[in-house]
Length: 265
Image 1: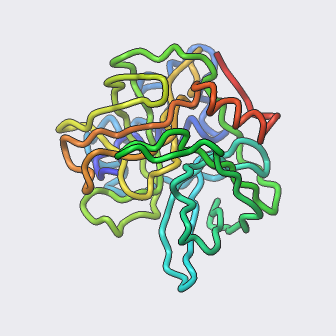
Image 2: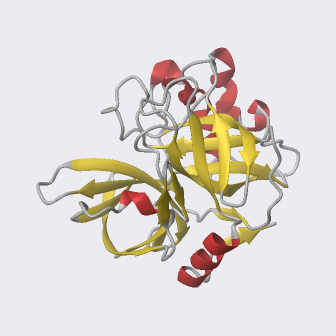
């Protein structure tokens, strides 16, 4: 994710953990003033606490470590759906993945199984139904996300993005949680698209499977997950493409694999 995306990291710190009080009556999540921790953000348009990352105890956004047979490592991102189920992207689990781990609060959890969407497919640069459900061999305490289950996204609506991907300056810089905000450019049956313009933020390599949240009833709900982009190095002019979770094929698959999933309209 672009380095400038650090500007909104504390928003995600507040809204995805229990210590902020995000969503309480009288607070407006869509505004910077919604959390006291954002006072430091208001003093900088590029970095939080001089560029230091924010610690996220029991975060709903998790790091996925993927290893090949030679123990070469790459990163994807994911989201907690239940105490042992993680949502991520289908394309993260290609034929080269030999083993995988989920990392939360510097603790690793073994991936027990991965269920890939049966109708996932690549169509040029797009990946339809780019969804995977991971089961881990443990019970975690992170709060599950809530999925937007109705098709009511609007053009120019804010998307709150987050992930463990590259900062865009160094494609090997993944592994640190960063966050930012984009604007919906277009929505169709399968995808949400958002353009990376000068001065805004973007997703990048390693953010795949990470969230695109929107605000509903003064709380963050998950509208999509990061799938791909149109420019290899994630530079200005790139278009981030997210799987739209309210797509019926996607939503039915998630419900089937995680019956207790939280849904919002």
